[in-house]
Length: 412
Image 1: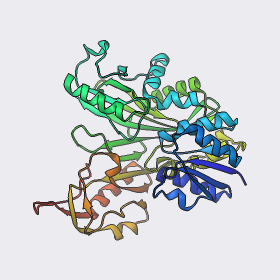
Image 2 (image 1 turned 135 degrees about the vertical axis):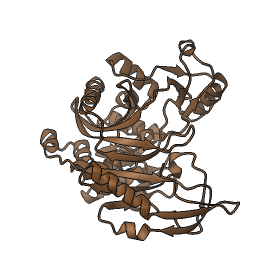
Image 3 (image 1 turned 90 degrees about the horizontal axis):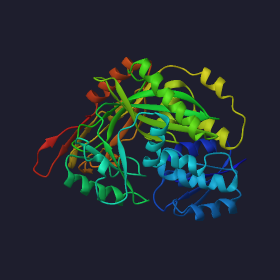
Image 4 (image 1 turned 180 degrees about the vertical axis):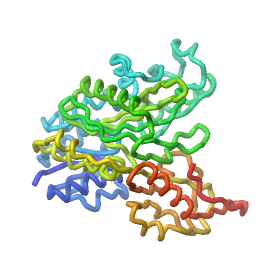
């Protein structure tokens, strides 16, 4: 039995924690107080600020942990790396996490390695840098070290940009933001695993976003991608360059790229040394390629020998995806189809507990307000597309607003 510390107790850490318990290890969790699912399965819980690295390190030493880990959340990774580094444990180091999690550092690294990224500038005060004076609008403003699209805004003029910078800096723990040129394209998700400086691709997915003004919230992520193989090979090459440069002992890596079909250009916009959120690492990857990457990660953090090449040679080639939806502000008056969908063999999970008659809904402003996901599996991409259409036809929800007007589900 190993003493394994998990930083965070949210849904992003739940299935990794569940796997730890299934392996017979002792699960210790550090979390902020609240209703978090890992609390219910952990052997020991410490209610402590997960961003207080020194305080978490003291707990880790007192418990004599054998390993520290987290998943699906950028914000936890600096603490994970700090503890692993200070205690000489297997895993990430602070500089390696910072090379990905800090958007300014990551983009500078991309520039140095020849990996295409949007033109960018570090922002430490509410002013527009000189190098952006000639860049045409729109621009994108982001906090330098946040996630889940929090504080991200598309701006169209100087006044809007200054206001967006102020907001973004408030969402940053370091008080910094990043300004980027806007790159128009379809999003591709690249999931992979780095082992001793080598990048192993787990799969590429196509991602769709809700068609909302100035709000960047994904509605679907579906494996495999329909993108040209030549593009996917180029992206894999970029991932390998970064893997060699940062050179972690091992890590799950989640990256997001934009591809413009008209000019055949692509750019990386986000990357992190952790599994993709919304159950990508815990559910979609195993459903898509047959590799339980969390199992591989846990073997690595406890120092168990791993035959990575054999693991990836055994991969399957199927399809998997998640879809989300939203409802307008109002009160749910009718729900149909949920029970039928739960019986479908291809529906692997439905997070729809809040979709019930009498529930009050709010205007969609951030990712956490999405409904779902509904996770599905299939034999190939066409099969997945057909199943998504079937789900969208079967699930009926009616919302009544304050004026008595009725609305249905929004999938796009």
